[in-house]
Length: 274
Length: 189
Image 1 (cartoon, each protein chain N blue to C red):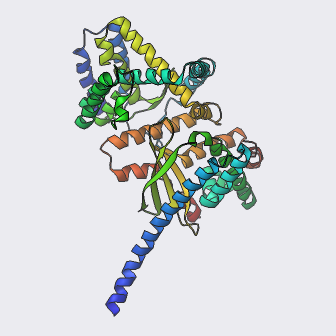
Image 2: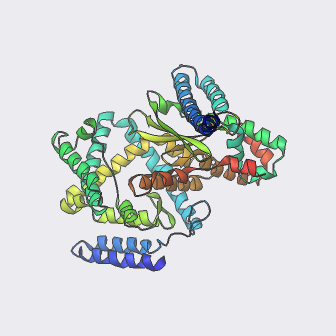
Image 3: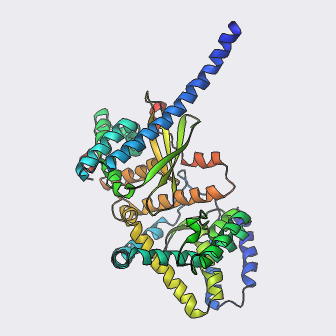
């Protein structure tokens, strides 16, 4: 398992080399990401499907993230949610989604999911034209919902296991594979690569505001996990892993039966075993 | 005649299974309809939470869910402790999920399909909440308690039983494994 993992690692380094003209920062970020991917040896997960050998480090990061949310992100999202009118928030979200579409399409293609690539391409065209440059989500209105994806999913499609659980500073729950995906998506985002520096920065800022909007919209859920649960670290970890596996199982090659079995707990087993 | 009787006997389990799939679907449909009527009743939050608790008690297999949420500690618990915990758990979970009722205002849940899977029945529904993309909610239903009751809800892969096992486990750890203290504290959680 480890050797397969290393082989994949090496192959992807080749992919990295073809982008040598990309800024040094991006390359070093990528290398750091692929280093993490080397930790993708799967199969070592516990009986509950959780593979978290660095739990104590992760817990410190979680406390840091919780602090950032409490003093910074939470209040900022409330400010943003309370001050900015709903239509403006929607426009910010729509533009941020549209900016993400080229990256989604690139990943759809890498996953050989041509139908999703076609749907996202059509969506991009419709939102740029009828949606006035992405200000409005005209596609969803005509029954063309987005097929959001990421490089973590691409790695999953290529057969890379999820690897160890990690909580990433400022980004939250993730796995070795998904963190690698996040780094690649950030570094090789087609829109940021194509746009001049200032516009690329504007796109990033817009994305951050869109995230604030999400934090505000889902504040009840986020706060119930972070502040109301007895062990917010364990709760966030469970939630992330279950939801991510569900997400990947849906679009991936997993059968419907496999997806069901993942969620099944037999509470009667204990009862009748006695 | 003998052959016909034999065929009828063979066919019986199928009929029974089909009936229970319908019962499972019916249970979820009734649950969803009741949730909607509680939300649109316009009552105060306290009264609504009481209604949610009644609903949970009549449509869910509360003793089994509570026992499963308690995990390994359930084995060491006395009968009195278990029933005390079950009562406390019923109130706790109704308040916990009931408090979020505002998110369901103006939304709806549609039942898509129901089927028998191994020892239980699965009812797949789609939730349409205001301003959110539709998402999948699965109900796991069993009749092992004597009638059709649901014992788990899975929202986009996130499993209520697993989540409550983690939560109750952590609450118990915080109290040094003292179940009686947990039961007493849960009334205010």
